[in-house]
Image 1 (spheres, rainbow, N blue to C red):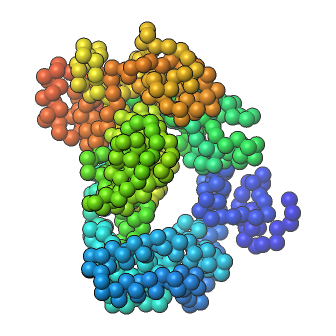
Image 2: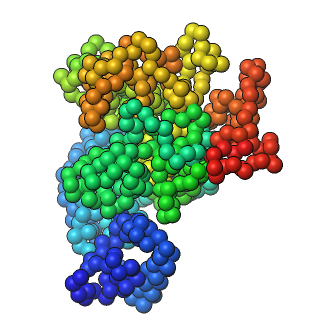
Image 3: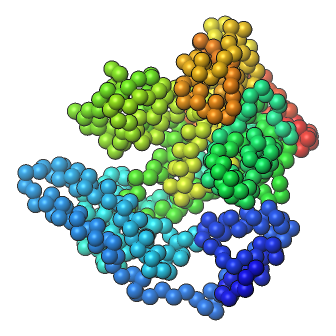
Length: 621
């Protein structure tokens, strides 16, 4: 190793194990995370001591050296001035245009400023970084602040929202360093007041959401070492550039790494160096389960001590982790000052809509109901637009933009806009497996945007519990369930066998038919499109069982408050909401209860045996 000349590098190097020492350390938020993950992988026994040494270095340096922040770091941004040079004349023209009504002028001001919000934030950040601003160091370290906060100080927020999250037509053309005009101050104060009130409500809202997530995911318990063998590979396709793969377990060989390998940060770097962009990993969302139980491989490594153990209730762990982050994120909303960041979908109200899938979902964008060509995109008289696929129009409300063009070919289930796909449309048009993958991506994005950033391993068990319901469509019912019953989807898939009339063909010949067996993250009942077929072939799947008709059950969305309402165990129903009605239905149908299952609720009826076999079977009885 070359000689170290930087005193900070020497101090950090001395605190680390010898094989981890190097000349330079890029210790921003991502770099620190990577360093700690590498330390946990290579030296778990030294993890605590090394962290203590690094913490002492930080405290000593802060005490003896301090941090220098001068007024020059708050000078007005030249990047901001450059952007405003082209924007301000347009705003002035609108303010002086007497031909516009007040409503027209307000809308025009918002439409003019909104496209510049994100570019302004980026430009001010890039300029500050080039100037080695101490505020950028603070931001990149992950200790405090966001790019929008830096922009508020040196740039211009451009737009603020009121207490109803609607844009105010008052241009915020100054930063804090310049000082607001009275009108700008009062416009921004709406958000400050809302933030102050939100702080008082944050703990209650986050706690309520945590209870709903816990109910939905509480059966996701580790019950076995490995999943049962299946004819086709099963797992979640993901990219090697996704750091959330760290701790996941490979479901298929990737380069020199064999299936069953627990992924480390170094593994991902090695795979990227070899040009491997995609890997297949085990996931709680893709493993068919009779009762919610998953394998250690699907659970992955959730601590520095190795894979999760049999008996670990990773569903409850994940729900609690998300709930804690949500509480912190909502408390920090007081710092937003109502500045518009609505280009990112965020906030408790949006997250609640994601979890409950209401009919009125303002952020929802349509999915194509059929294969076809986009014939035209027209303005709607009530505002918004219509996207026409063939002869069918799809309404797109204001604030959501089309992502398809006229003449473009789309498939059944394709997204047509940059809006959030409605969970009901996702499960209906794409099948449960693909719906879970897309839904998990949007839920994680919403949490990240809301200051509640969490690892993918926490989102997946929650999604596996939330999106796990199907409606029986067989006239004669399925098992003990009659037509119309809502039952656990994973139970149906676990027991499902290809019908006698199903055909085994190559994926291309199966296009337009329905999948009859699990493959990758796709579940039985998924309509095979050209994109699905291409995905299957990409992973070396050359034949699948498919059928002309959908199976006798249909995946359905169930809002988070009903996470245990439809559970087949009558005692489990009682830990949720609407317990009176749930108990009446259970009594009417003669429901039973199993005190030895993945749900802790029935086991509470036999406290003498509660948990005695948990670490060997994953069951509470």
